[in-house]
Amino acid sequence: MTKPILIMGATSGIGRCAMNEAVRRGLPVRAFARSADTLEATELVEPFKGDATSAEDVLRALDGVRAVVYALGITERLAMLWEEETLFSETTRVLLHAMAQSDVSRLVVVTGFGAGRSQSAMSWIEKTGHRAILGKPYADKDRQEALITASDTDWTIVRPVILTKGARTEDYRVLRDPATWRNGLISRASVAHYLIDAVEQGLDVKADVVLTR
Image 1 (cartoon, rainbow, N blue to C red):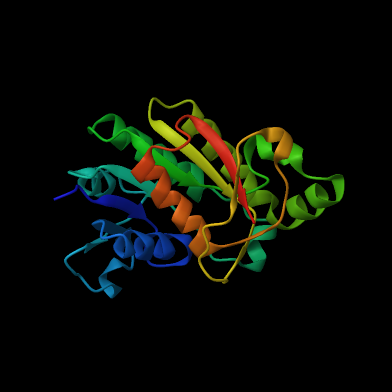
Image 2 (cartoon, rainbow, N blue to C red):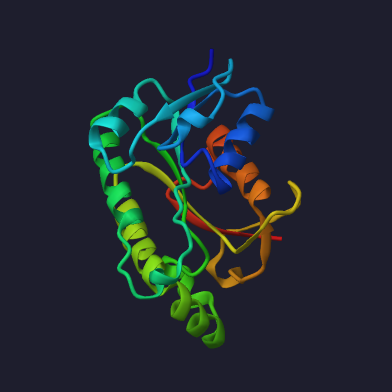
């Protein structure tokens, strides 16, 4: 049987959609989350309750998987306007260290449009509004992306634009050339389709892409 894909953040948002997409294709998943015990174990889904900041939990979760899809997110709250955010960089540092001790090298990570070098693709108005509201989380996504690109993993950084609850489609755009990067809308389910494609087809290794309609 095919080795499972480890999906970190599998109980909500893009991570939940990625789990559903993998299952739709008949692919096994190890569904990592603090609330993984709320998931039903099936022939294809192995719930894995764990803390992404715990080196021990992450190392155990990596055992026997083929690739990692990182889709952790934070709960939006007023305090994120002023509180420093460290979740993305902290958990990525733990994950990269654990991967260096394992035989897993494939890593597909969801960040967001405006993180890392994609910030330069934003207009002045977009950049001002984005950083005013999401400045703290995205400063940490910047740190996260720097860790990933400096790692020895076979990484792909995936930056979706504004997320919707829309239907899954396959006619979205994968913008690989920074000159084409732009904002827009895309459904979480469509992002999930690309994430599983990236694992299955080895897409965009050592590259960063923007996803939009």
